[in-house]
Length: 155
Image 1 (cartoon, one colour):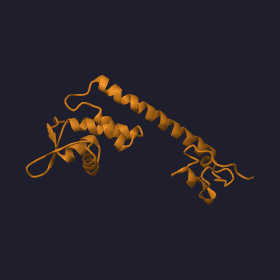
Image 2 (spheres, helix red, strand yellow):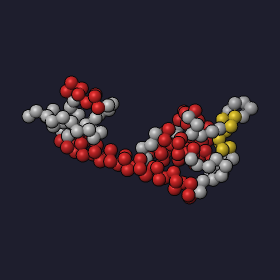
Image 3 (cartoon, one colour):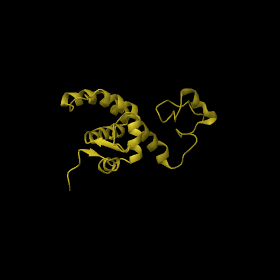
Image 4 (cartoon, one colour):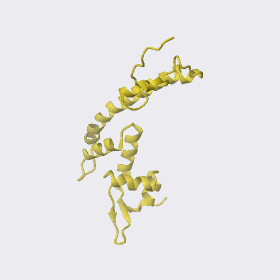
């Protein structure tokens, strides 16, 4: 396997990171990664962008939005390689978000085991049932599955 060049094309960055070129262009438009342009207008990425792309992917796996990933990246130094202390400072905010995500997934798991997992989808006990869209007043999304208690059901 040959060594990576100092500057990567978008195809090389895509191949190495496992992220589609279209996603890399989107990341660039959001300021998550940066590229220099050749005289012909082609993107060239520094090898450091591999770490930034990996960071963004890790943030997404942890359940963070791209905006949250960008916010985290903005707390890392531009002028030097991040130290362990730099990464620890960022990871503290991620731990809270990961804990929230775990709680969301546990609620979903409990709901699936108790409702969808039963196979009947009974309208008397189903947490997906929302007659008259009464959950709309509590916000967007599947409110009962997100942890809002459904109203008492009539037997």
